[in-house]
Image 1 (cartoon, rainbow, N blue to C red):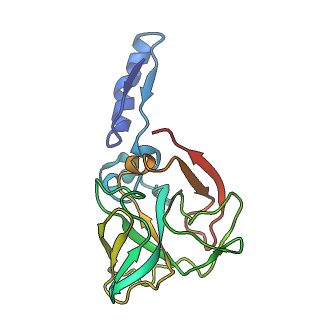
Image 2 (tube, rainbow, N blue to C red):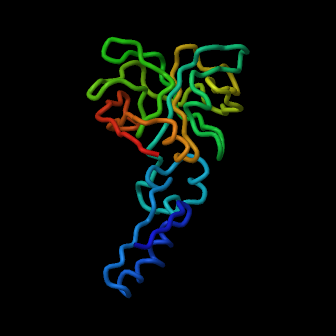
Amino acid sequence: MVTAGGSAYFDTVAEELTPLAAEFPGTKVVVRAGAYLAHDDGFYRGISPLARTTGATPLRSAMHGWARVVSHPEPQLALLDAGKRDLPFDEGLPEPQLVRRAGVVDGEESVGGALVGGSSVGGSPGSELTGSDVTGSGLAGAEVTALNDQHTFLRAAGEAAPIGAVVRLGLSHPCTAFDKWSLIPVVDDADAEHPRVVGLVRTWF
């Protein structure tokens, strides 16, 4: 067996090692699992060969975090209920992408602080996330400026997202998300108005 990794050049690894399998019968070439499995909205978006894919539908990250606004200590600062224990931060801070106003999941208030494959807020397989439409309103010019153990600091250019709103966060370096979550919800459509949780993925990192 010949194995190598590197999410920034996994395509090159495959191209260079594959001839070995033909040259030495019985040789198995294995590209190690890595960030390329989920892609991201930060570090690997800039360097991965997946980012160079051309076509009508570019490849996108398959993993996001969702967190609820729980406090407004300042007019333009919102604190979200997810932090370093929930989200990767070693290769860049999360990127605010979308905001959903407070909704319900099967009659219960939706939960924040969740990591999902695709995008969602949580819930059980088959549940529907209801509430207002997913929109970028309130996020123009917004950025995550810091994380502590339990919270994300979201600084807005204008008025901060309201308390109870749920923010979708793009992640950087998904490997350090996998090591925080042993069970990840999967949704059917990351951009749907009402994403549905359709399964769960267990990780062994």
